[in-house]
Amino acid sequence: MFIPMLIFGLICAPILGCLLAGVDRKITARMQGRVGPSILQPYYDFRKLLGKDTGHTNRTESVYIFMYLLFVVIATVLFFLGGNFLLVVFVLTLGVLFFILAAYAPGSPYASIGANREILAVMAYEPMVLLVAAGLYLATGTFDVVAMTQASKPAIIMLPLLFLGFIYVLTIKLRKSPFDLSMSHHAHQELVRGMTTEMNGQTLAMVELAHWYESILYLGWVALFVIWKGWVGLIVALLVAALVYFLEILVDNNFARMKWQFALKSSWWLALILGLLNLGVILLLGLAL
Amino acid sequence: MSHSSKSPWLIHYDASSCNGCDIEVLACLTPMYDVERFGIINTGNPKHADIFLVTGSVNDQNIKVVQQIYEQMREPKVVIACGVCACSGGIFKECYNTLGGVDMAIPVDVYAPGCAVRPEAIIDAVVKGLGILEQKRAALDAAKSKKKEA
Image 1 (cartoon, one colour):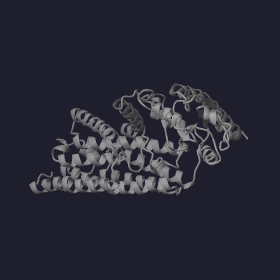
Image 2 (cartoon, rainbow over the protein chains, first blue to last red; image 1 turned 60 degrees about the horizontal axis):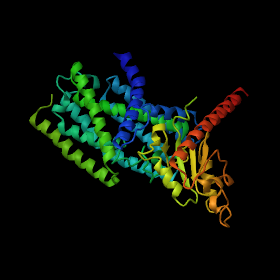
Image 3 (spheres, rainbow over the protein chains, first blue to last red; image 1 turned 90 degrees about the horizontal axis):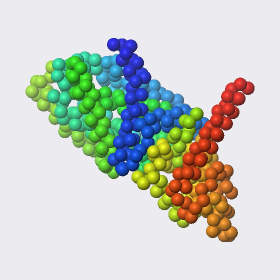
Image 4 (cartoon, chains in turn green, cyan; image 1 turned 180 degrees about the vertical axis):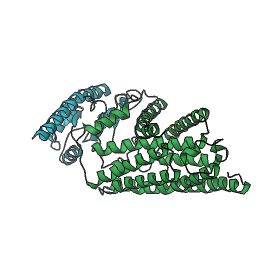
C-alpha cells in the first residue's frame, strides 16, 4: 500500500482539491442564482498564473511560499501514508507559519493585517486541533493514522462533541466566511486580498496549489472520525467528508464575516466546553481503549 | 494557448465617472449577466488582475493613480476604456479640468463606447480584450524563449 498511497497523497490529492474548489465555486454560484464557472476553473486560473510574468516586492516571499507548499505537501503525504497524526498536525502548522512570514515579507499594510489576522486564526483553531489529536488517541489507542483506519468502530461514537467542535474550527482553517478574516476568494475587498495582496504569478499559483492539498487533508481528518475497518467504513467516511464540505459551502454563503474577537473567543470556549467535556467523560467512564 | 483567456481577472477603477458606467460594470457580476461563467473575477488587486477596466475621463488628480495601477499590473495585461468619457472624454472633453480619455495616461487596447456603457458592450469588450491578451502572452513567450537562446 506504500506506493499507491504515496501517489494518492502526492498527485491525486491536489487534483481532487482542484475539482473540489471548482465544485465549491459552482455550488456557490447556484446558491446565488448564477450559472457559475466551469468546474475546471481553478485549474484554468492556476495555468494562467503560471504563465504570468512574476514580480516580487521582496524576493524572500517566494522562498517562504515554497516552504509553505513543501510542508503542506509533506503533511498531506504523511497523512495518506498512514503516519503519525500529531506529526501531521505539527508539520502543517509549520507550513502555515511560513505562509504568515511570506505575508509579512513585503511590508505591505494589507498583507500585514492579513498576516496578523492569520496568527489570530491559528491561535483560534490550534487548541481544538490538539484536543482532536488527544481525543482520537483516547478513542483508538494510537496516534498512527493507519491504525485509526483499522478501528473496529468509528471514533465519532466516543467523540461526538469533539467532532462538532472540529467542524466549527474547520471553517476557520479553510478560511471560509464567517471566518475569512485573513484573506478571501470572494470579492470582500476591505483588505484588498489580505495575505496574498503582494503575491502574483507563480507565487500565487503555489498558494493555490497548497490550498488544494490543505482542503483534501482537512477532509481526510474529518473522515478519520467516521472511518472503521472495511469498505463500508471507508465509503461512509467519504460521504460524511463530502457532506461536511457541503455544509461549509452553505455556511460560507449564508453568513457575513465575523470579527476576529468572535472567532477567537467562540473557538476557545467551544474547545474548552465541547473538547474538554468530551475528553473528561471518556476518561471518567474509563471508556478509553 | 488559451490559458490567459480562460481566467481573466479584472480590476475596475473609476477615474472621474459619474457612476453610471460603474453601476453597469458591477451589473455584469450579478446573476443577470454573471461574467464568472467565463472565469472573470473582479479582484480589487492590480497585482492579480489581467484586465484593467477604466470608467470616466482622466484629469490632473487621477492620472497618477491610473498610471500607478497600470504599472503594478503584471504582463500580459489589457486596458479597456469603458464608456464614452473613458474613450475620448465624452461631453467633458473640452472642459478646463479634464485631460481627455484614458489613452492620455496609459495605452488602451479596447474602447467600449456608450453613455452609460451597456453591460453587453462591456462583456463584448472583455471578450475582444481576451484575444489581445492571448497575442500579448504569445509575444511575451516568444521574447522569453529568444532571451533563453541568447
